[in-house]
Image 1 (tube, rainbow, N blue to C red):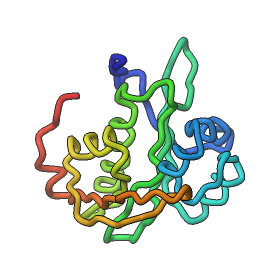
Image 2 (cartoon, one colour; image 1 turned 90 degrees about the horizontal axis):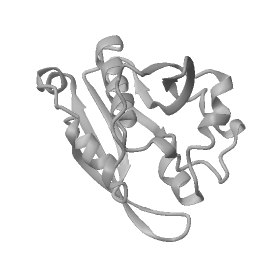
Image 3 (cartoon, rainbow, N blue to C red; image 1 turned 60 degrees about the vertical axis):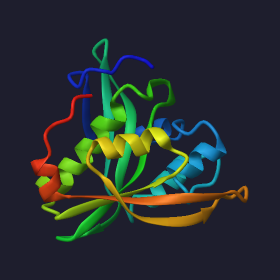
Image 4 (cartoon, rainbow, N blue to C red; image 1 turned 45 degrees about the vertical axis):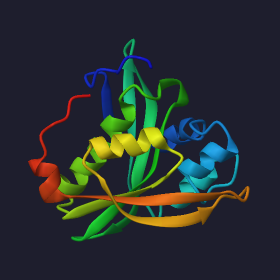
Length: 180
């Protein structure tokens, strides 16, 4: 495992159109794309990403500062959003060359904080396939707990479990920070 990146070199901002081609490279295979973006068709294209922007909320990128330059290294949005009620984080993805270095944690914390602090939502959910053990462990570390399980069938015919996880505002605010 590579060493974690300092949060001092990570920042976040809204998605810009110029970022979209970079995001299209985060999924290395059709299978990986299915788990990041189940409705997409391989290979992911800028037009597919742009088509989702009208139905998704708060598309957010994580950037890494290197040698005075900013590069996009992560992406997420709210796949669903109900004002005053709930939202669901979607399309959590990280540059494959930088995975397991704290970017996903920074990104998911950013989305959770925005949901609770900016949007004042009482709860937040997300979905994660059972095959993504690193993500499931990250979400548990962040206090998200499974609340439902659905059976899905992949495009190649394999059954998989899709966990729905949740965290509520009170639990998020009362949880002690967990060291990375």
